[in-house]
Image (cartoon, rainbow, N blue to C red; front, side):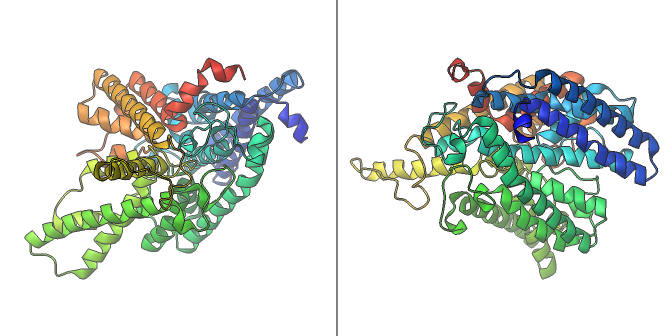
Length: 506
């Protein structure tokens, strides 16, 4: 059976899996006696499975040797075309909405961005919410597997900072898994990571339900945490019954978005004897604590001017609200703490949205579900900066890589990290310009562009002075954002590698 599946194109396999998953919300809607929604998902899933089965039979045994670039192409097609398939049951359920809206919704979910055109959330049923969350969760799993099976062998997705090969070229210093055939790498990575991903999601779900969340709410929050999509039922973490205790547990599970070494060592990335030596975790904790302290001090001084610092409980709540929210936006999840508003009420000051934008731009760990520039690239630039400052004092010094945490970085890692940062900046400028030309103000265009490219959709609701109504955007603006979300999830270097003729010849 495995051999037969390996002879079916990877993209077709993804569509088959999508069709099977449509039966889950169909069953949920059936239990809730929502027969119309149940039929919509059931018929859509049956149609997708039937068509894909015919395609699989037609192409079975006719394909040649699968190349690594073929899997990279399948990953791109999954992000660009698979949402059109995933949107079928939602379009059938909602009926009167334009197809571009549900396509936008599925692109946002699959890329773990979490933007939504459906506000308030009460207009959607539990089954439709579950479908959005499942697509986001599937997108997170897709990136976990693709990192080991596709991006690492090609020195992309952040691995170009540590790998010996050039970005977009096959790495000569590959691990045993990376030396296998592309489809074998994909199946091995899926078999290794799927139990971990499902197990972590199930564990978090059970904990949240025990703490008082409804099963559907707890499941949505668990899937949103592991995939960093931030997609909930509309209740949000800040309004869920699990309260601060639930936030503390979610905070621990967000650590899996700071470094891949927390759950896997299958990519040949930098390996440490201890997680405390992991540069991404250390830098992530440093950013969280420094930014949270700065926010707390800002609000504390604001409360001091109002002579309202006599309430230590409000201070503790404000501190926790800052720590959790900073961690959430650094991992591009976008949850707000239930105590986030306490700091603002305590001091009367608004939290600058620019800080949240900067956190999302930094992003989480390499080969995780988080978006942004990634912590490892930022760390590579930091190490390079220290070396340049040493040269200012001692011009003839010979810089080594013995500094703690820097031994796994390639010599040109900082240069490639800077190239990626420039590509990210150019992409941000281009998307912002296109959105501004479409009629948005500069502030709205910038927030939308950062949200899409960093896959941190909740920024649109909290980064500006007023929330941005995604439903009010036109079709052209939504398609621009779809392209930006796909480019942000796949990353610019991977897009460039995909159109490189040298890679297609191998």
